[in-house]
Image (cartoon, rainbow over all chains, first blue to last red; front, top):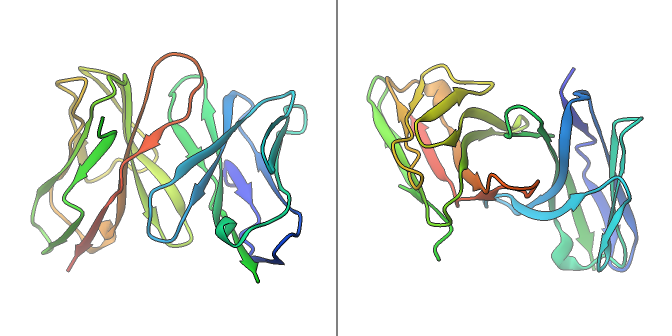
Length: 110
Length: 113
């Protein structure tokens, strides 16, 4: 079983749609949680950190459920520029290095 | 402030050759790490470092060496290149404080023939 699991997609949605991505992680020692965005053939870029209380950044909302070891990302009012691969990422207490999911590809269509 | 700089951006090696992928950061970050990304596999941790003089292995360390003699630099050495090491390599760094995410370099695309 992978440490971080995501639905690979692709999710094809029209502009203006709301789309949600889910992720589960297996290591209960995971300490920090993130969503990264990766455009084709580019480096991953931090989209947002994820906190137990939930957090919002403009059109993006992230949620963490530690009991279920589940992380989500909600994108409202999708834009063409949101088309990318979204990576669910966890960081454990010991190594302070990242473990990545394989990513969920989003394609926003006009 | 250049962030995380990786060189070269592209490289073609012959099987058995050795080379060093360079990574430098100018943010005084304590933590640095190397990942490789293969299609359908996501990013996998090769080696990481929590400070100068301290390194440790990640998930896929075989065939790679690292050293961290300064805070700024974290080179990755391929000892004897194999076709299985054809991949995109990313270096990343973060501060040792808090729970901030890592900042990534733009990557090195390596092909081993």
